[in-house]
Length: 123
Image 1: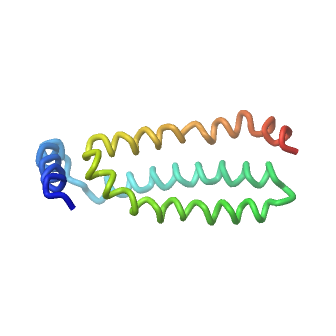
Image 2 (image 1 turned 90 degrees about the vertical axis):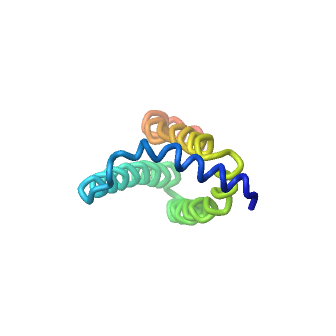
């Protein structure tokens, strides 16, 4: 790894250290974990319900495919995360991840609104 890249990460950590004025308390961490878990469960529930309703004949295969692909993304993330943070820097890499996560927010809403039309088009 490049020495200047590590120095850049250290510099970014020290620069934003002043923004870390709130100490993580157990209550704050429990609330954060609860909110993120509930959001993730709602998102997965919307996607799994849509997949099962859209392809009732192949529901078992579709749900199994979803259960196989989702952990592959989770397993693949550590393979590029370190390189992304070193090459882009902390600010841009975090911004990229935030933009990607915001791009996926409307998916359950779109599936709810247009799901029946999509299902009928592919039936």
